[in-house]
Length: 66
Image 1 (cartoon, helix red, strand yellow):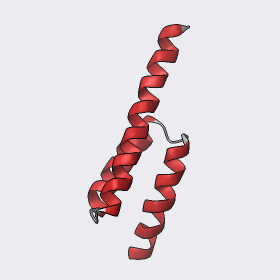
Image 2: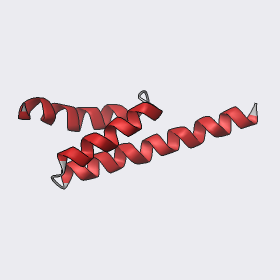
Image 3: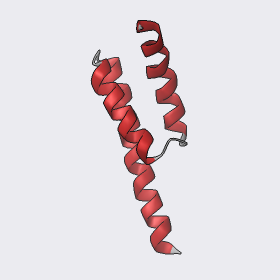
């Protein structure tokens, strides 16, 4: 029990920090780095609440810029 839980927790924590990084990049005007961080986070955990927040922020604007 404990090892998988700890591993999952570490992976989720890593994903969350990458989502926050993606949002920070986006807000500072670097859409490419925002997308790269978002994609990396999505490969780790695409279902955490931060994924949705980042997707709403970054996804909406990348759709508008196309």
